[in-house]
Length: 242
Ligand code: ZN
Image (cartoon, protein in one colour):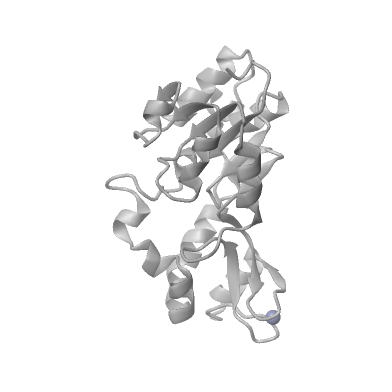
Protein backbone atom coordinates (compact mmCIF):
# COMPACT_ATOMS: atom_id res chain seq x y z
CA UNK A 1 0.00 0.00 0.00
CA UNK A 2 2.81 2.42 0.83
CA UNK A 3 4.61 1.73 -2.45
CA UNK A 4 1.57 2.77 -4.45
CA UNK A 5 1.65 6.43 -5.39
CA UNK A 6 -0.60 8.77 -3.44
CA UNK A 7 -0.81 10.78 -0.27
CA UNK A 8 0.09 8.71 2.76
CA UNK A 9 0.06 9.96 6.33
CA UNK A 10 0.60 8.53 9.79
CA UNK A 11 -1.56 9.33 12.80
CA UNK A 12 0.10 8.49 16.11
CA UNK A 13 -0.83 8.42 19.77
CA UNK A 14 0.56 7.50 23.16
CA UNK A 15 1.11 3.86 22.18
CA UNK A 16 4.06 4.73 19.95
CA UNK A 17 5.89 6.34 22.89
CA UNK A 18 5.42 3.64 25.54
CA UNK A 19 8.55 1.90 24.19
CA UNK A 20 10.37 5.16 25.02
CA UNK A 21 9.29 4.77 28.64
CA UNK A 22 6.35 7.20 28.58
CA UNK A 23 3.19 5.69 30.09
CA UNK A 24 0.10 5.94 27.93
CA UNK A 25 -3.25 7.23 29.15
CA UNK A 26 -5.78 4.48 28.75
CA UNK A 27 -4.14 1.03 28.90
CA UNK A 28 -5.93 -1.05 31.53
CA UNK A 29 -3.82 -1.20 34.68
CA UNK A 30 -0.97 1.13 33.60
CA UNK A 31 -2.70 4.01 31.79
CA UNK A 32 -2.24 7.37 33.45
CA UNK A 33 -5.93 8.26 33.34
CA UNK A 34 -6.68 5.01 35.15
CA UNK A 35 -5.01 6.59 38.19
CA UNK A 36 -5.92 10.25 37.75
CA UNK A 37 -8.95 12.09 36.47
CA UNK A 38 -7.69 14.08 33.47
CA UNK A 39 -10.29 16.81 33.90
CA UNK A 40 -9.00 17.37 37.45
CA UNK A 41 -5.32 17.27 36.51
CA UNK A 42 -4.64 18.38 32.94
CA UNK A 43 -7.48 20.79 32.30
CA UNK A 44 -7.95 24.51 31.89
CA UNK A 45 -10.17 24.45 34.99
CA UNK A 46 -7.41 22.80 37.04
CA UNK A 47 -4.89 25.40 35.86
CA UNK A 48 -7.05 28.35 36.89
CA UNK A 49 -8.62 26.90 40.03
CA UNK A 50 -5.40 25.69 41.62
CA UNK A 51 -2.28 26.56 39.62
CA UNK A 52 0.03 25.30 42.40
CA UNK A 53 -1.62 21.85 42.34
CA UNK A 54 -1.66 21.92 38.53
CA UNK A 55 2.07 22.55 38.30
CA UNK A 56 3.07 20.22 41.13
CA UNK A 57 1.08 17.39 39.54
CA UNK A 58 2.10 17.93 35.94
CA UNK A 59 5.51 19.57 35.67
CA UNK A 60 7.71 16.75 37.07
CA UNK A 61 5.91 14.28 34.78
CA UNK A 62 6.37 16.60 31.80
CA UNK A 63 10.05 17.09 32.60
CA UNK A 64 10.46 13.32 32.43
CA UNK A 65 8.60 13.18 29.10
CA UNK A 66 10.97 15.83 27.72
CA UNK A 67 13.97 13.65 28.61
CA UNK A 68 12.68 10.64 26.64
CA UNK A 69 14.35 9.46 23.44
CA UNK A 70 12.66 8.27 20.23
CA UNK A 71 12.30 4.52 19.63
CA UNK A 72 12.11 2.39 16.51
CA UNK A 73 8.51 3.44 15.86
CA UNK A 74 9.42 7.14 15.65
CA UNK A 75 12.65 6.43 13.74
CA UNK A 76 10.82 4.23 11.25
CA UNK A 77 8.21 6.91 10.48
CA UNK A 78 11.00 9.46 9.95
CA UNK A 79 12.66 7.03 7.53
CA UNK A 80 9.38 6.45 5.65
CA UNK A 81 9.07 10.22 5.24
CA UNK A 82 12.67 10.54 3.98
CA UNK A 83 11.91 7.80 1.42
CA UNK A 84 8.76 9.60 0.28
CA UNK A 85 6.55 6.69 1.37
CA UNK A 86 4.60 8.89 3.76
CA UNK A 87 4.20 12.66 3.62
CA UNK A 88 4.39 13.22 7.37
CA UNK A 89 2.96 12.56 10.79
CA UNK A 90 -0.05 13.80 12.70
CA UNK A 91 0.44 13.15 16.39
CA UNK A 92 -1.57 13.47 19.56
CA UNK A 93 1.65 13.25 21.58
CA UNK A 94 3.24 16.25 23.26
CA UNK A 95 6.63 14.55 23.72
CA UNK A 96 8.46 15.93 20.63
CA UNK A 97 9.73 12.42 19.83
CA UNK A 98 8.80 12.56 16.13
CA UNK A 99 10.87 15.73 15.72
CA UNK A 100 13.74 14.20 17.73
CA UNK A 101 13.57 11.17 15.43
CA UNK A 102 13.97 13.39 12.35
CA UNK A 103 10.42 13.66 11.01
CA UNK A 104 10.05 16.98 9.16
CA UNK A 105 6.32 17.45 8.63
CA UNK A 106 4.72 16.91 12.01
CA UNK A 107 1.32 18.23 13.07
CA UNK A 108 1.20 18.17 16.87
CA UNK A 109 -2.56 18.42 17.32
CA UNK A 110 -2.38 18.47 21.13
CA UNK A 111 0.53 20.92 21.24
CA UNK A 112 3.94 20.17 22.73
CA UNK A 113 6.09 20.59 25.84
CA UNK A 114 8.94 22.63 24.34
CA UNK A 115 7.51 26.02 25.29
CA UNK A 116 4.90 27.88 27.29
CA UNK A 117 3.53 31.40 27.14
CA UNK A 118 2.43 34.21 29.46
CA UNK A 119 -1.34 34.35 29.84
CA UNK A 120 -1.19 38.18 30.06
CA UNK A 121 1.32 39.36 27.43
CA UNK A 122 1.74 36.08 25.45
CA UNK A 123 5.55 36.20 25.72
CA UNK A 124 7.04 32.77 24.97
CA UNK A 125 9.20 30.81 27.43
CA UNK A 126 11.21 27.64 26.98
CA UNK A 127 10.20 24.61 29.01
CA UNK A 128 13.61 24.79 30.73
CA UNK A 129 12.80 28.33 31.94
CA UNK A 130 9.48 27.14 33.34
CA UNK A 131 11.12 24.15 35.01
CA UNK A 132 13.93 26.34 36.40
CA UNK A 133 11.41 28.65 38.09
CA UNK A 134 9.45 25.66 39.40
CA UNK A 135 12.58 24.10 40.89
CA UNK A 136 13.46 27.42 42.59
CA UNK A 137 9.99 27.46 44.16
CA UNK A 138 8.17 29.90 41.87
CA UNK A 139 4.96 27.91 41.43
CA UNK A 140 3.27 28.63 39.10
CA UNK A 141 6.09 30.01 36.90
CA UNK A 142 5.60 33.71 36.16
CA UNK A 143 6.43 36.17 33.40
CA UNK A 144 8.27 39.42 34.24
CA UNK A 145 4.92 41.20 33.67
CA UNK A 146 3.44 39.18 36.56
CA UNK A 147 1.27 36.96 34.37
CA UNK A 148 1.15 33.21 34.86
CA UNK A 149 2.91 31.04 32.28
CA UNK A 150 1.01 28.11 30.81
CA UNK A 151 2.43 25.28 28.71
CA UNK A 152 1.75 25.14 24.96
CA UNK A 153 -0.14 21.86 25.24
CA UNK A 154 -3.83 21.49 24.52
CA UNK A 155 -5.45 20.92 27.91
CA UNK A 156 -8.90 19.44 28.49
CA UNK A 157 -11.21 22.40 28.00
CA UNK A 158 -8.95 24.14 25.43
CA UNK A 159 -10.01 24.68 21.83
CA UNK A 160 -8.06 22.72 19.23
CA UNK A 161 -5.28 24.78 17.67
CA UNK A 162 -4.19 25.51 14.11
CA UNK A 163 -2.21 22.23 13.88
CA UNK A 164 -5.43 20.26 14.16
CA UNK A 165 -7.10 22.16 11.34
CA UNK A 166 -4.03 21.63 9.14
CA UNK A 167 -4.18 17.93 10.01
CA UNK A 168 -7.83 17.79 8.96
CA UNK A 169 -6.86 19.26 5.59
CA UNK A 170 -4.03 16.81 4.89
CA UNK A 171 -6.05 13.75 5.97
CA UNK A 172 -9.06 14.68 3.85
CA UNK A 173 -8.95 12.32 0.89
CA UNK A 174 -5.50 10.96 1.69
CA UNK A 175 -4.92 7.53 0.16
CA UNK A 176 -3.47 5.66 3.12
CA UNK A 177 -3.60 6.56 6.78
CA UNK A 178 -1.33 4.54 9.06
CA UNK A 179 -2.83 4.69 12.53
CA UNK A 180 -0.05 3.87 14.99
CA UNK A 181 -0.42 3.56 18.74
CA UNK A 182 -3.76 5.20 19.32
CA UNK A 183 -7.01 3.58 20.40
CA UNK A 184 -8.91 6.41 18.65
CA UNK A 185 -11.09 7.29 21.59
CA UNK A 186 -10.40 11.00 22.05
CA UNK A 187 -12.36 13.38 19.86
CA UNK A 188 -11.96 15.35 17.70
CA UNK A 189 -8.79 13.47 16.66
CA UNK A 190 -10.69 10.17 16.67
CA UNK A 191 -12.78 11.48 13.75
CA UNK A 192 -9.77 11.91 11.43
CA UNK A 193 -9.62 8.30 10.07
CA UNK A 194 -13.06 8.82 8.52
CA UNK A 195 -11.53 11.16 5.95
CA UNK A 196 -8.91 8.70 4.67
CA UNK A 197 -9.55 6.29 1.77
CA UNK A 198 -7.64 3.32 3.21
CA UNK A 199 -6.76 2.56 6.81
CA UNK A 200 -3.98 0.54 8.42
CA UNK A 201 -4.18 0.16 12.19
CA UNK A 202 -1.18 -0.81 14.30
CA UNK A 203 -2.16 -0.79 17.96
CA UNK A 204 -2.01 -3.27 20.82
CA UNK A 205 -5.69 -2.84 21.65
CA UNK A 206 -8.65 -2.87 19.31
CA UNK A 207 -10.08 0.44 18.07
CA UNK A 208 -13.53 1.54 16.90
CA UNK A 209 -12.13 1.59 13.33
CA UNK A 210 -10.78 -1.97 13.19
CA UNK A 211 -13.65 -3.24 11.05
CA UNK A 212 -13.17 -0.50 8.46
CA UNK A 213 -9.40 -0.96 8.21
CA UNK A 214 -7.76 -3.07 5.50
CA UNK A 215 -4.94 -4.12 7.80
CA UNK A 216 -5.16 -4.41 11.57
CA UNK A 217 -2.13 -5.44 13.62
CA UNK A 218 -2.58 -5.81 17.37
CA UNK A 219 1.16 -6.23 17.89
CA UNK A 220 3.99 -4.28 19.55
CA UNK A 221 4.69 -1.23 17.42
CA UNK A 222 8.48 -1.47 17.46
CA UNK A 223 8.39 -4.97 16.04
CA UNK A 224 5.81 -4.14 13.39
CA UNK A 225 7.71 -1.06 12.25
CA UNK A 226 11.03 -2.94 12.14
CA UNK A 227 9.38 -5.66 10.02
CA UNK A 228 7.82 -3.01 7.77
CA UNK A 229 11.18 -1.33 7.09
CA UNK A 230 12.76 -4.70 6.39
CA UNK A 231 9.97 -5.66 4.00
CA UNK A 232 10.46 -2.37 2.15
CA UNK A 233 14.21 -3.06 1.90
CA UNK A 234 15.08 -0.16 4.18
CA UNK A 235 17.63 -0.09 6.94
CA UNK A 236 16.27 -0.77 10.40
CA UNK A 237 17.60 1.95 12.74
CA UNK A 238 20.38 0.83 15.07
CA UNK A 239 18.27 1.59 18.15
CA UNK A 240 16.68 -1.86 17.86
CA UNK A 241 18.85 -3.65 15.31
CA UNK A 242 20.28 -5.66 18.19
ZN1 ZN B 1 3.77 38.50 30.47
